[in-house]
Each structure stands twice: as structure tokens, then as C-alpha cells.
Length: 84
Image (cartoon, rainbow, N blue to C red; front, side, top):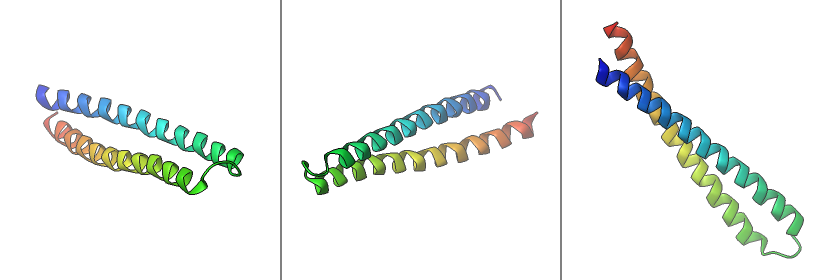
């Protein structure tokens, strides 16, 4: 049971960290979008779109990772509730 509880706490921390990373990606996307809008006449817009798309993709990968961590945490939580 101690091992499961430790695993659960580790997964909670991993969720927190992933949520923080996702938030950072979202902030970066917003900054890049603002930059593109302000500089659209002086920058290569297609390159800027590729950059914002790449940052967005990183965020999506993190969301997928978060989904699997949440799934694993829910499984561990269910096992813990069965023990108690």
C-alpha cells in the first residue's frame, strides 16, 4: 500500500508539472500570435506560422502525456480505494 500511495503522489506531482508546462506553451503561443499580428508587414509570416505551430504541437504532446498520467493516477487511486 505504501508503494501505491507513493506512486499516487508522484503522479499528482507529474500532473502538476505537466499542467504548468502546458500553461507555458499557451502563453508562448499568445505572445507569438501577438507578435505576428504586430509585425505581419515586416516578417516572413509563413515562418512565424511554422514557429507558432511548433509551439502549439509541443503543447498538444504535453496534453496527451497529461491524459496518460491522469489515467494511470485514476487506476492507482482505484487500487488504493480497494485496499482501504
